[in-house]
Structure formats: C-alpha cells, structure tokens
Image (cartoon, rainbow, N blue to C red; front, side):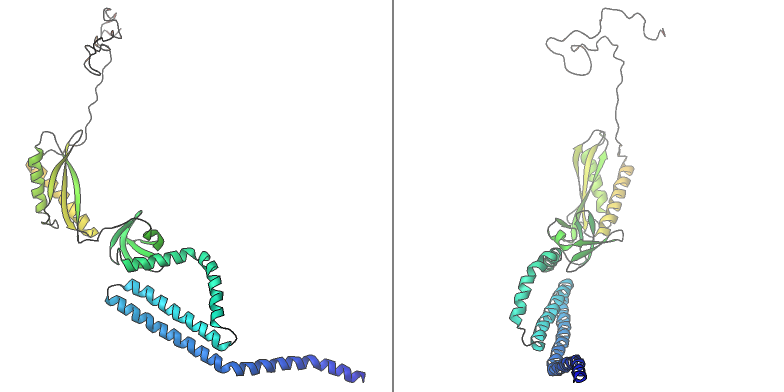
Length: 327
C-alpha cells in the first residue's frame, strides 16, 4: 500500500506537466487561425504601407517636393503598420480591446513625449519646413556660421554641402527658429566693392570710367546697369562704391567679382588714376621752441584764449648751451 502511494505521488508532477503541454498545444491550434490571420494582416499592412509610401513620393516628386514626399510616405507607412499591429493584437487576443490599447498608449505617450522631445520637435520642424518651403533642395543658404547648398531635408535634420566640399547636418528645430539667408531665393543678386582713389583725381569722372569698365565684364547684367558712386572721404583716399548685378549662384558671384576688380584695376591703370594705399603723417618736435606752451602763439593744439597762460619755459632766459654745440 505504501509503495503504491509513493508511485502515485511520483507520477503526479509528470501528469501535471503533460496536462499543461497538452493545454498549450490545444490552445495554440485553437488560436492558430487567429495567428495566421494576424500575420497575414501584418504582411498586407506592410505591403500596403510600401505601396502608399511609393505613391506619396511619386505624387510629391511630380509637384517638385521630393523631400516632403519621402517624409509623408514614411509617416503613412508607419501609421498603417501601427494600425495593423493593434488589429492583430485584437484578433490574436480576443480579450484585449483596441480601446484599452489606445488608452494605455495615451497614458504612455506623455512619457514618450518627454523622452523623445527633441526628436519630435525636429520632426515637426522638418514637416513645417517642407510644407512652407522657405528654401528647397539646391538652394544656397546661410544659417548661423554655415553656408552651402541644401542637399536634402529629412525628418530630423537638413543636410548642407559647404563650398569647400564638407557636409553639415543641422537639426530642423535650429533652422526653423534661427534666421536663414537664402542667397538663391531670386535669380539675380547685387554685389558691391569699394575702391579708393587719390584726392587729386576727379571722383565724378572716375566713377563714370569705372562704371563703363564694369559694363563690359562678362556676367554683369545690363538691367539693372552697373553703377559707381562717390561714397566716402577717407583719411588717404576718396572711396567709390562699385555696384553690379549678376546671377545669384555662388560660382557666378565669385567669378564675376574677380572680373570686375580686374576691369577696374585695368581702367585705373590705363587712365592714370591713383589707387593710393593708406598713409600716415607723424610730426616730431623736441618742445624747445619759445612758443611751446604759449596758447597765444603756438602752432598746434588748442586755439588762443582771451587770457592765455604764460609759457611753460622761461622765454627770457637764454639757453646755456646753444643747439648743436655738443656740450
């Protein structure tokens, strides 16, 4: 009797394990249609998301907005997959209701928002940039200390290629909240350069000479015509401001500027116009003259007053050693 009881006790755990396994197997085969339906739904949502993303990109590219199409396509694909996951969970687990899942996601979205605040901020800024289009792919912009050509705008950042061949990645939130100069927003742009001439030259005729020289430069637009204006009376020169219009691209700006400067230099050289360099005049004196300190007679400094003071030195006294005596 005792041996039979011990045998029954030994076989009970095995029976429990077998019952559990049988229950899992039966449950799996019972849920197998739902699992297959959920898997099929996920695959269909993934394929439909890819198709929707491709169609969105194609439509955006036809309208000249490839970056916006890429971003919207990714968002549409992601939303379809999320909806498919919720529906699959409701199919595989009938006790789970989509409303409960959405409520859970609503509570967790606050924590997710704080954790991914920068990512969501850049995403929203990128979406607004792509919709409003203050600049587009291929534009040349200046943002903070960076200048270059916009390669493309993504959901997180904007890629800029500098003129010396480097890539700068700037977060969209920084671009959206900072001043941006779009150099190629218009087809043409004005450039200028200051030229100093000597005070012995005629500013009016020299300005006409330089303006005529700029008109023959390749790349300088005739409408509006180039002009040269007397601009400033500097310490050693009369400054003229040469202004001209050309195409907005960086390459045109650089090349045309070099041609304009060379044309102005050649015109000044051929007409004998002085292009002076800055000069300074320094006066030295040893403060031994009789008038030094006498405000009524000295040659520099303040003007004479009504009651000038006496000189700093005694004018009546003769120097004991004449200048140049060497003693």
